[in-house]
Amino acid sequence: MSLVYNVPFVSIFLSILIAVLCTLFKNGRNAQRLTFALWIGVAVGSAMLLSTLMFNGGTSFTYAAGHYPAPWGNELRAGPLEALFALVYSIVMLLSLSGGAEHTFEDVVEEKVSLYYTVMNLLFAGMLALIYTNDIFTSYVFIEISTIAACSIIMAKGEGESLLESMRYLIMYLIGSTMFLFGVVILYSITGHLLMEFLQKEIVALWMSGEYQLPLAASLALMLIGLCIKTAIFPFHSILPGAHGSATTASSAVLSGLLLESYVILIIKIFYRVFTPEIIASYHVYDIMFAFGIIAMLLGSYYALKEDDIKRMLAYSSAAQMGYIFVAIGIGTNAGAVAACLHIITHAFTKAMLFTTSGALIGVSGHSRDFYDLRGAAHRDRLAGIGFTIGAISMIGVPLLACFVSKLYIAIASLIYPP
Amino acid sequence: MNFQALLINYHEAAAVIVFCIGFMTLMLHPNLIKKVIGVNLSSSSMFLFFGSRGYIEGGEATILDPVTLEAPAVMVNLIPTGLILTGIVVSVSITAFFLAITLRIYNRYGSMDLDEILGLININKNKRFQQ
Figure (cartoon, each protein chain N blue to C red):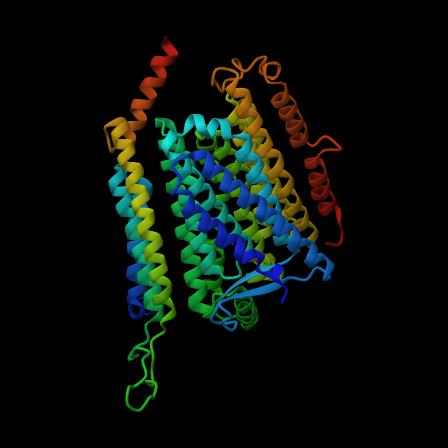
């Protein structure tokens, strides 16, 4: 086994280790340097893993932690897609944190900047583990870790508004993760496994035999609703604008661009690795996701149009883009899932760019997020203005830009017949 | 409905009832401390549910006999218990974090009541609007 196959485990382990080390620094700049070095390292490692896997024919491999044989140990599973996600996540984290660094040092109390980087590292570890894990209980644990980390980076500003929004976010996320745990518990008690491959075998056998249909459906529904609360799809979108609007620049970029998507990745993994697409289709989950995706697309864009506040508008736009991703998954074909993965990547880059540039625009306009006060901001900060324009045009879906390609893929996936 | 099944699996039935109580407290109660209690109740009920799935009637602990080195005939399933330990750690940290936010909100607004706090914020917003 080549050394590069240790990248998934080492990157999760190192980000938790460096999270602990960051608490030791008094100076926030040093914590920032160490964190950025880690993310560059993770990006390089994931790129190496990706290229190695692609040269070896693009198959995925299983990493058994502690070399315990399969049904007992804890496993990570990495393929080209996971390696690509890890690469994108580390680059976007690096870009949004360096883009929002000035605001981080302004907004967060000076002694606590190193703690901010601690929490960011924990969030990164949580998201990486959600991408790589092959064990459904591990994914629950890392969902909780990322929940706490996400709430702490919302309240990092320490103002009244962000405290309350963080509280609302925490309550919604707790409901989501409790429901997810309930689903996992029911699934464990009817199958007796927690690793995804064994779960899939047992679930297929149960589905064919016709026994325990109600617990199976209930666990699927509980896990999906729990994760959908976390992705802030249509009925649960109300937490997004307040939390992403009131947080500091880097936090909103990471939350909106990366955290929401990591739960979608987990949903896709549950569909393909825990259940099979046929079982999911037999419960009409794809139809429900498609319907809610369309509602989220329309309503998210409508609410975004009504906003006067640039960051709240971008947050509603995130809700709408989640709708696109859900529509792509809801097509129910492999092409749809591929389009959803591509849109996750393009949205991560574009939304992080929009949030960081809008943070810069707000910074030169007297810290007002209102459109009226933002007039002429692009003239005061040219680079941010150009970046915001390009990001916004890409988000609309103008050709030659990133989001156009992924939306084109969604359109193509919806046209393939027979599916 | 098969009520006999509910009576036999009374651990699980109780766990679901406690879960609902905790869940409704978390959703509907305006007092932040009571919300924390709701979170605790719902996660504890989850552990009761999970733990009772691992309990087997008449089962013994999975320890070999020290003299004969024979395993007991019927053993309880220990994996749920192990997972609950992880879950308890998560639950404790969530509670600590929730209480920390509550403390900061209390220091900022001088109230634990969410409705009252939201009312205060609205009054302030209106004042700013009028000026």
